[in-house]
Length: 237
Image (cartoon, rainbow, N blue to C red; front, side, top):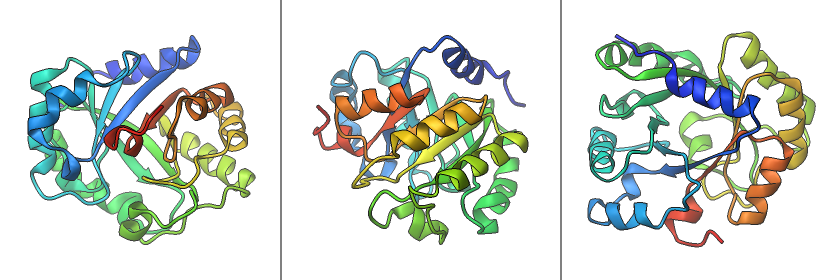
């Protein structure tokens, strides 16, 4: 049984009202339980969501991390799974990701089909999300695991068309991803063009290391920005 779309509705309303959302991505393989409370205390007050997931995570690890986080925060916890083994019934929602920038059926539909029986046994809110991998200056874990090539930043129209194909096929969110540890984030031009062309919320992640980059992403049209590595290593300023 799947819950109503409360979290999706909140994100959609944020777009309509020009409210900007900020999510922190937690990689379960890098998370240390004994630091959970201190880590959460250090988060900026404007953080609105926690995403949990990674390109490849040990089986069962995501569930352990979500349960720990639930002890210390009331923030919504949304799964950002790299595969079917990263599903946890203890989270609030799941980004049901389809890697629409790639052509590997494993991450376009096969992992999704395999996850259905697990998801049906939970109360997770399922949010269909079109995931677009964009070159951030170095090979990412997503690229290696999915065996797909990211779209080049200068391929703006191809990226826009991919986002629109996602919207037309029923995706409720578009996630523009430069990848963990990207040398540079998704460009403002890409964000602006995708935001203008689509009518669904746009999430942007990868390579955002400071407040100036965060604000530029917002100004370009990002409805939610996701920061991971910079918070993990304490370098976000």
